[in-house]
Length: 456
Image 1 (cartoon, rainbow, N blue to C red):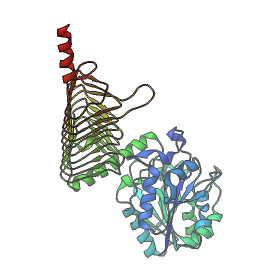
Image 2: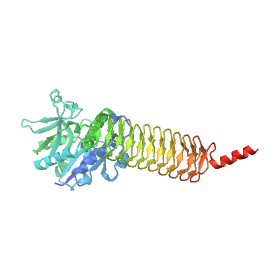
Image 3: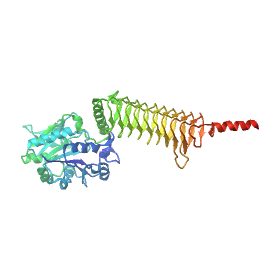
């Protein structure tokens, strides 16, 4: 059976009370429309059609070439929305799957069950239902004496008896394509002046066509998002799914309830994530790491065997067996090389700490390149900004930087050099030299100057 998919994403989402289109509100680091498109893409070989309207340009910019687009303007209901996809899809498939961009928890597995049920039935349409105690405003499924679905009644139009029905319409359908395109133009106009896709059920029944149904197994999949409260509920469900996936893949989450992992994060086996940790964006974490507690890592690459304690990392890299914290901060462009260590209250930005090097506490590296086996003493600062421009600092291998050194860039410190504690280094330091003082001077020069003073 050839299948195409239509995803409805044109609604304004007024109850979100936001300038951002509803379907672009993020869940686990991605806009909610991403999940609907991803699920649809798994069950069909053709690009889904997103029906856009309010904020359509923003939706198109966010999803790019992952979908085709039809525009609904004005927005005159779900039936009218699907009609906008007709020109793109007519004659291309035997069946049309219709889903919603504001139902991000619906899985490809459930969609596949719906499609297979429809394919085996010969029905004009097959709808996905759910049994739930909280109707959340969904329409009620009305069945005839033979148990077949005969109508969907919107909540606002229900009688008291119908309001008591707990089998709900989710709005997800699989249609016979030829029947759908022929009958959409005949949908009646509602009292609100809109055309509802729910009316296709009564239309098919009146024609004597079979209406099939499938009840969802997991109620949480059909959570539709209309408010910020719904958004938080969906976030909780989605994060629980993500956490379970990583635990089943061999990652230890000490307290899943306080562990927040975005959808694009990857984690290696035997890594332990401690409570109150946020792994965000496209972060990659290797095996045998220990992350947290109280740590935020966003868009970073962490190698194997690393330790990150009570720290914040953004767009940074930690190579294998390096460690940071507690209370460290790696900003954009920071790189800690293999086996390197950055102590508590350290900060790096656009800098590299070389293999095996150690950076003491209360230190800052900005626009600095530090070679292997360097010791950066506590309280060391690279003074990289002169008020107008930023300048680089280069520290070669085996250098010893004394505590409280001020390294005034641009600066180059040669291999094996040393700076004394409290030095303000304003000029390049040759390899093997020792400098100290304010401003820092080579040790030999300081001795000669003392001798001349004594002669006077």
